[in-house]
Image (cartoon, rainbow, N blue to C red; front, side):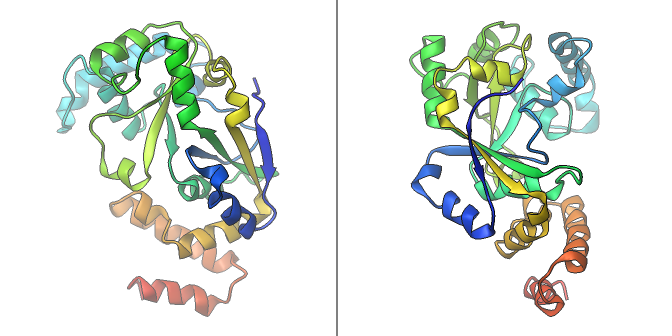
Length: 274
């Protein structure tokens, strides 16, 4: 199910820079996706198309809660559902939380990194989080959203709810990865409908939604320019795994970049890798 937003096609990197630095980008949050044809959907939504997201979520939460302490994780209190979901999201368990970032460059990295070979464009979605928050306040008839992440309000408005809406959510405890990616979550109110169906119910959302499309042919150009800004796997995923993935991407860019190889190698020396 599609949703109508304003589509912007990027033809060269300077177009992206101009947009990302413009007043139009103020107050927006961003999400990168590898194919412009993909809908906005949560991992839970994609993993539970046949059995239903609500029942699948209950099973996953119960299973994760029962075993997480065995792996030495700093587990949340039993009733803090958002903290549990954020921890599950961090380790790759399908959840109702959809990752967004305050940085258009981080979003562009995630879109370009795994751009589908058979796609025409990879996409950066952008939505005005201030407008979205205001629409959620109006729809829920509450005075503020700052406490939606607290255990009782989160349980009331999200867990077992069938009311269609989307709200920005920030877990009370962050982690190094979320901080590096300038991340936050957008959370749908009802699991009976997909993320985009929830989003469509927000008044005027289409007026404040951008679909920023990059031709797949620009993938190396985008990644190389982001690398010059020190946006890569090593900085976005602190730790050895992220560093190893960064090295793999550096080899790819070295082989495929149109830039002079000596200039590419100079970047490695600059960061002490050569």
